[in-house]
Length: 139
Image (tube, rainbow, N blue to C red; front, side, top):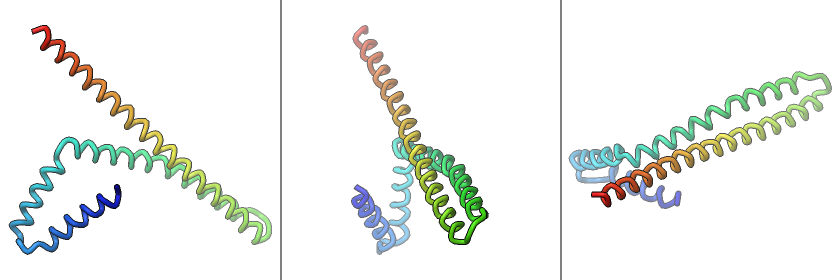
């Protein structure tokens, strides 16, 4: 799927950049693109992507900070340089695992939130559709 999207985007960009029709055709393409960009379904997907990115960005800095503190403590501990290096490497591995776990948790939370919003919207749509149907039957 990613390959197909990339191909379409690449063809579109190549056409826009390589067109011999000039500025007028470019303006037509730009106008059509802006019309598509401002459609409600497209903006809903943009909002979903932004919410997902915000959720992940909020979870990761705390884990990064904690990991950095662990690594610094491991490096500044007493012992031979080799022991400090090994403890710092172990702390870095643990920190990387913590960051990965935080990112996974954030992704799962964003998925749950998105699923909940989608379910709520479809339930609302179904109930309003049922109400319209009952109203038309009553008339």
